[in-house]
Length: 273
Ligand code: NAD
Image 1 (tube, helix red, strand yellow):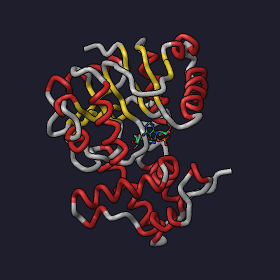
Image 2: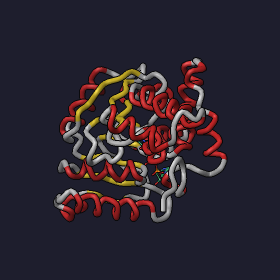
Image 3: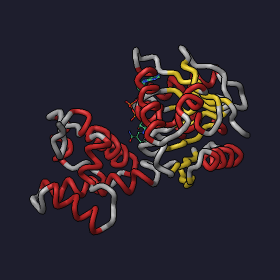
């Protein structure tokens, strides 16, 4: 399967990055986001990113067509807001619109792929295709098999990830998959270290950067991801695995209650100008 035509739904930071990456591979992309101005903002972000990457800006953007609704395509990659009911509704509608052999993929960080597969009549063609931010730069694609996903679907998506210049890693559909099951407890423990007065934020992040050779410390990374998103994913891990070690750190919850969501609100563990 070559996936000549891909429908990307959601034109936010991830959807725009995915559309750009797919178009840069020579494929045709239809991009849908019903919120006013979202597609335009996505296209502007792509133009900036392609320019920075010294890529062929106009040729890549010419392969991306904004569309007002879902359209037929060989593959859906969904990157809408992380809300289970909204994603289930989208998968139901995509199941009605896309031809039967098409694959329906989700970029969700934590929603069970098995539950998205279950609302369609083609559960064997549903899969998780989890890209990392910024999508055009980071190489990893975590490929998540629902309980119902067929071997053919998984193999086709693994091959597509390679064709996009990415490195696929396969995981099964357990809460947080692999990436967030490891990353979020790391961030959570850093929040505990801060809450318990073990060290200041700068020291915690310096230790991770220089001691573990991470490009960013866990608190700066949490600010980038969004503290609300971090709490939401910890809640999924906690509920889904039933182990108290996954409960979100009270300091994270408190910051979210105070509207300190990280970079997007101007303040999280750090203040942004
Ligand atoms: P975002 O808020 O930047 O973008 C979401 C977009 O979805 C918005 O443009 C919004 O208008 C659109 N949208 C909302 N509801 C919609 C609907 N019903 N139909 C079509 N479009 C709709 O969010 P994001 O950071 O791009 O995250 C998108 C998805 O990617 C989420 O599932 C998130 O968990 C996942 N993800 C995010 C990251 C990250 O670092 N931000 C990394 C990996 C995966």
